[in-house]
Length: 171
Image 1 (cartoon, rainbow, N blue to C red):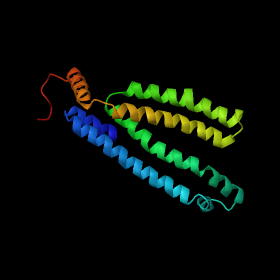
Image 2: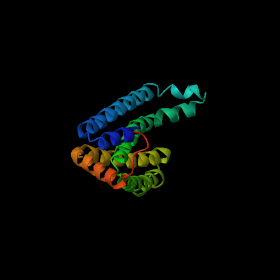
Image 3: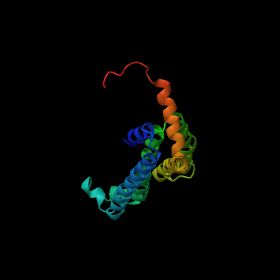
Image 4: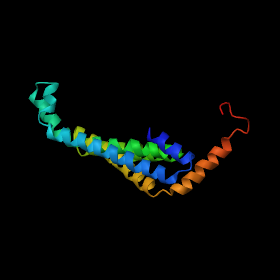
């Protein structure tokens, strides 16, 4: 939904409101993600017992919980920033970043860590976290370096391009 909010603010010609919306939605998502990650870490030794009585499974869950916590934080921020980029009309950029980070970095890194360095599930998951972290950092950097006044001008150009010169249906 952040793409809609940012897109609406840009289309309405409100660069400060668009920037403010980005900061608020990113901060809010970060706070919720950190709360979820902290909860997982606090309950890492007991959370699996809600699903199984197995000690081996409980130990594995406990060992993988830090990776889950990192995933929760990154996957709380990354989709919001991707939505912001889509709201700005940067769909192609987001697609390239996504493909590059997951298929060029995350999957090969996960393969190396999981199979070559024999880290198993931890290695595969760590590789994917690496790809997500890279994507998140790129999107943070691009989003917070954005000239919002310029984005309003770009949105206006897109609106003018598609504007129908006929009488509107609703007054």
